[in-house]
Length: 231
Ligand code: FPP
Image (tube, rainbow, N blue to C red):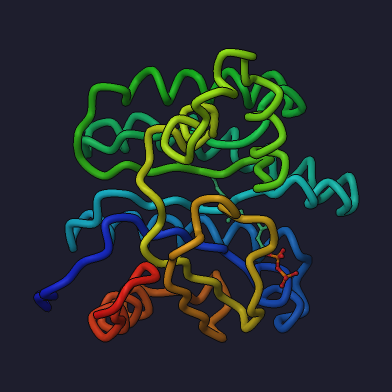
């Protein structure tokens, strides 16, 4: 097993290209999402193997509602089915599962499964696996502002604002990966990514392998993080 001197604590991934993967094969788009689940499994396994503490996967954005109703429904069904089936396995692997995003608009059944998996895995101290579902960075900041109390305003700072964010229990991502060639953040972890490194690959999400994951870790070794200071 390859050894890395510097490991990112938190990796965020924008899993893009499921639709294109399917279209290239003349298959319906939903087939790409199904195959995307296998990549989720592969990266979770790799993250555990290489000792990554936090992995956050962008699974459904607040903008994804613009897709055809059938695709949106398919995605939620797929999530329900997979989370129900794999929750137990993740628990046995000491994975702590969390969800970030606006839950209220999600199907009740999915909400319940999300709560159950969070509850089941809440005492685990291995990999922290977070799924961003109905997540949008702007929505997250707005809902945080709406929760602020008058007393909060006087001493409001970056640190105490954090407790109102969905990511209150997560460190900021050290590196954000986006697959499928696009080079944009698409409303993912806006507040949290202010000093994140970015890694873009043309690989479509269903093709993303352990080897691709290792390339991210290898690339991270070469980044000089300055956080606005000098090296
Ligand atoms: C982007 O590809 C992918 C998505 C919008 C969905 C990703 C979700 C999963 C892989 C399921 C997550 C699983 C759980 C258990 C929460 P795209 O459709 O935008 O691809 P395209 O850009 O090629 O059309």
